[in-house]
Amino acid sequence: MSEERYYADDVPETHQPYVAAADRYQHLDYRRVGTSGLLLPPISLGLWWNFGDDRPFETQREVLRHAFDRGITHFDLANNYGPPYGSAEENFGRMMRTDFKPYRHELVLSSKAGWDMYPGPYGKLGSRKYLLNSLDESL
Image (cartoon, rainbow, N blue to C red; front, side, top):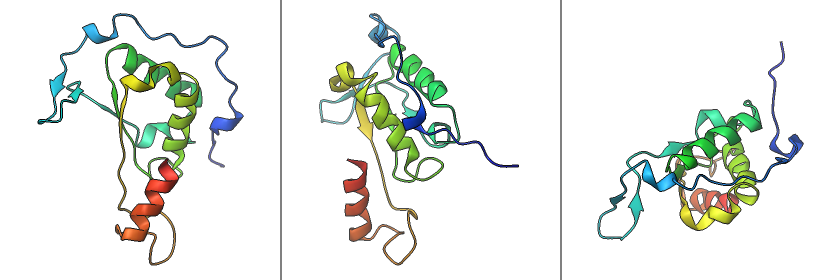
């Protein structure tokens, strides 16, 4: 039995442009993060296993839209979220270009690196080279 894969580039764009809920900031209390001045909701959405190419892109889109419509503005990503590795960042990037482009100034994105990513001595455990490559590929 072969595993079904969903590729973001194969999914047609939404026919209806996304318009975020006008009352999206009425659902949660936002909290200051240290002395940075940054305000975050008490809950964030992590895109680990449910945003890879093994899930339908439209389902991912629906989850992210619903979260944002309810006031979640912090999304957590990593270079090896998927599966396969990197696909969650790629899928989120596609939604940033389409659905969330008008709202990008309202979002806080976090990412991380430091686990295995590719074969060889620099593909794991957070070497400087690995971290710089991960940052470059995430951007």
